[in-house]
Length: 137
Length: 137
DNA sequence: CAGCATCCAATTAGATACTG
DNA sequence: CAGTATCTAATTGGATGCTG
Image (tube, rainbow over the protein chains, first blue to last red):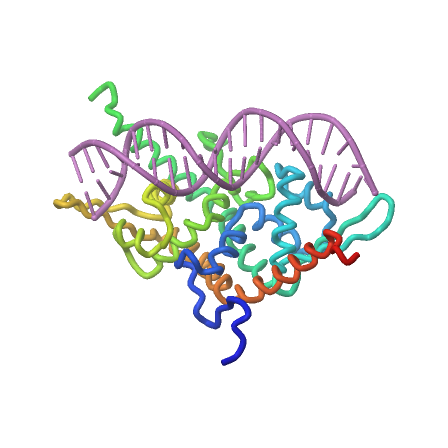
C-alpha cells in the first residue's frame, strides 16, 4: 500500500481548506516583503546589503526573517563566501523563479493601477464622510 | 500648468520606494485573505455567508475587514438588498477582475507546488537539527 | 558585512455579546 | 443574515547593542 511516511498531497491541495498545507505557502507568498524580495531576485543574485538598499523601508530583522523563510521553503538559496568581511549571496531557486514571475505581475499591476485605486478611495471616503450627517443636514 | 489637486503618478510608480502609494495596494493584495476572497469572487458574486463558509477558518471580523478594504480600493462592490433578513452580495469590479486572475495564479501555484515546498522544509529542518551538535559529535 | 539577541511598542486577530 | 462594538490574546515589527 505504498508509503505513508508523511503527509503529502497528490492533486488534492485546496488553499480554501484551513488545514491544507498549501495555505501555509500561500501565506508566505502573500506577503509584501516576499513579493519585493523575489521581485528583486528576478534580476539575478543579490547580496544582503544590496537587497536591503533595494527594499526601501525594510529593517534588517524583517529582511533576515523573510529570507530565512524563503530559504526554508526552497524558493531562495543562500550562499556564504567565507571572506572577510563575509559576503552572502541570495538567489532564486528553480522553484522560486516560477513564482517570481507571478509575483512580479502583481507588483506591476499595483504600479500600473495605483491611480485607479486612489481614485476609488477618494470616492469611498467622500461617501463615508457624508454618512456622518453633515452639519448642513 | 494643469491640475496639482492631488498626488497621482503617471508611469512612475515604484513599489520599491517606501513612500510610493503603489506599495499600499501591494500590501492589500499581498494578503492571504485578499487572495482567497478575490479568488472566490472570480466565480461570480457571493453573499457574505457564502464567502465565510468558502474561506474556511476566517472569522467574521476578518472577512468584514477584508471586504471593506477591497470595497474602498475599488476591487469589490457591495450590494445590499433591503430584504428581511438582509442580503448582501459582493462582486469583483472590472478593476478587481484583472488582479483576480493574477492572484488565482499564485494560489494555484501554491496548491501545485506544496509538496516541493514541504520537501524543502524537511531538508532545511533536518540540517538545522544537525547544527545543534548531535550528542554523537 | 551580515547577521543574532533582546526588549518593547504597535498592530493584528480571535472570542464574545449585541443589533437592525 | 450581516453585520458592529469591545475586550483581550497573540503576533508582528522596530530599535538597539553586540559579534564572527
